[in-house]
Amino acid sequence: MPFWKIAWRNMEQRALASSLTALSMALGVAVMICVIVIHSVAVRQFSQDAQGYHLIVGGKGGELQLVLSTVYHLGQPLYPIPYTYYQKFTEGEFAGITQVAIPLCLGDSYEAPNGRMFRVVGTTPDLFDKIQYGAQADGTPKRYEFQPGGRNFKTANFFEAVIGSVVAAQSGLKVGDEINPTHGIGAEGHKHDGFQVVGILKPTGTANDRAVFINIEGFYLLEGHALSPHEEEHGEHEPADEPADHDHAHDHAHHEPLPIDQREVTSILVLCNNELGPMVLDTAVNKGEDRIAQAVAPSREVTRLLENIVGPIQLVLLVLTILIVIVAAIGILVSIYNSMSERSHDIAVMRALGASRQSVMTIVLLESILLSLLGGLGGILLGHALVGLANPYVEAHTGVTLGALQFDWQEIILIPALVALASLVGLLPAMTAYRTDVAKALAGSR
Image 1 (cartoon, rainbow, N blue to C red):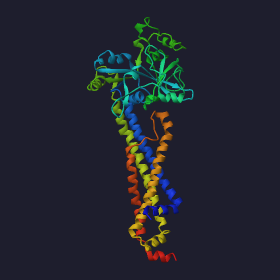
Image 2: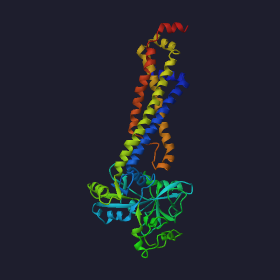
Image 3: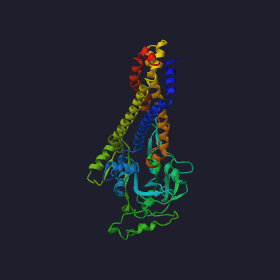
Image 4: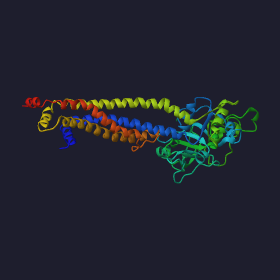
């Protein structure tokens, strides 16, 4: 009979002990799979979200805070900068090296009927028309696309909106529905005038899937979004509190754009038209005479975040899961070793029938390896199932999409590592079997 069949029969004879031992190994491997896959997906997600442009320009404050609030719709946005600063990139001193500049206005939110909250971003149609959100495996750019029946909002239609795929799925919103943003990030603020949903983005796997995008022209006309006119301009424009009058139930009729001097932007996405552009703009914005804003390379901040925070956390979690697997392996050692006294007679009979010491030792090692392999394979399946089950929660709160069938190259080394570990822990009981005294074991069983 082949050695592996004998090892399998030994495991069957101790079914309960073998099952519990394999289960402990499976749980350890499952946790390790979850850590590896979630970290891999998170790194890819964070890196992808910051693609499509070179710089983020925004108010003074923390660089990471600017990136998190602008790119990932997390945390509080920084203080805004004048709209005229944005115009430097479209028609002013920076226009010559700027390919696309997209203004963003943050600070509002949308509460769905089911109570879920989503960030609202005031912007222009260029966000979806002129930049990409990543790259395919072959290097071709990923462009924003709309689900059937939808489209991008138009500049001239002030009260139109586009929503991400997660927003649509979790809120039940459809093209043609109306949404009322809330002033501020939370459900307690004033409910603004309505915007009509004209498009739903196809899933991008980025944080934009869980955001609501409204026409920036309509954003400026909402209550609390306009600056007070300069004193010398009173009489030319409406009084300081007049923009609130725009915030009534509208019928999408024609509205006059808010004057430039009453506008602000929270941040600007800047795509340069040459390789030196980002360095030139970085110096001009951060070290120029007019230092009211800062320019941040999102990829650099994301790298720092991953290296300084996410990476160490993953390392700690991996060390913990490795310890769990080692504990499970020790459980295999104890289980087999404790059974040696019970199986001494069987081992002696095998030896008496002609089995060599090496053969007996091999059978015990194979038993240890089979237990580890069964636990490891079960752990891999369980780990990916847990990742799939966690996806709805993770996607709802972070925008990161996890898939049960997402694999990472690090998983490839798990099985060989488990075989090596099982061989190591099985060595002690195997040596015990190797040293079994045939005559004493047979005499003791009489």
